[in-house]
Length: 103
Image 1: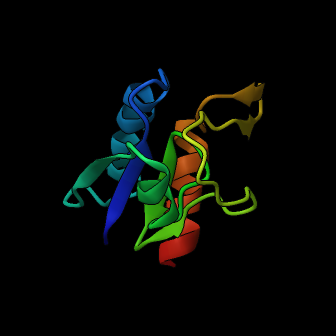
Image 2 (image 1 turned 90 degrees about the vertical axis):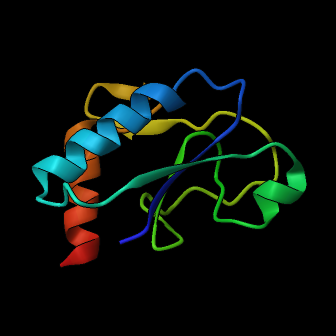
């Protein structure tokens, strides 16, 4: 399983999002999976991957939360969560998305 967190330097959500992804991986029984971080620095970097704003979480190269348009813009992403719009999904949302993708 190749899980990656795509982020821009100016987005404050990516650090906590990484912690949540690691926690979700443990909860889903994938503790051996290594989360990789990729800094998106240019529009060309963004165009080369499934980037939909920072942070974007990909699993085997696919956006774990499809539905947002791909973007070359170096901007933050907003997620729908049970508590409303947020800069990152909840641990539960990430765990459920990983489980749905892997199963």
